[in-house]
Image 1 (tube, rainbow, N blue to C red):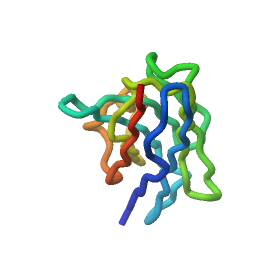
Image 2 (cartoon, helix red, strand yellow):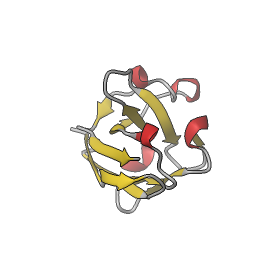
Image 3 (cartoon, rainbow, N blue to C red):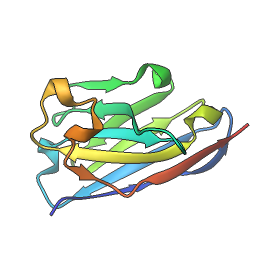
Image 4 (spheres, rainbow, N blue to C red):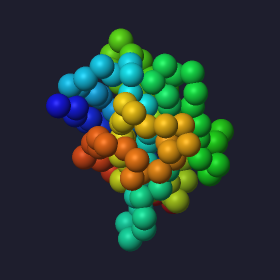
Length: 126
């Protein structure tokens, strides 16, 4: 059974950095597309970044472009989200999600992923 575990969240000041990790188990990791999503308190879950199975395609939501970077290490069954120049509006619970059969046009939608982690809290103080 596929399991995802996020780690690396915490409290950081504006302008600081964090690196989130999403560790995958229970399947052929290299064949899964992995996305990062976030959910601020009282708001809908929103797309942050995605990386395809072979790492050949990746995309970042406009508000994080140039500040966040998604990457994967298939040897370690892990996807990372490096977050720099953090802002208070980045405060949210961050989730990673994975799916093996998701098509390219669906990779930005949370409802299209079959496996989710429990989330990790990121808080950016002003």
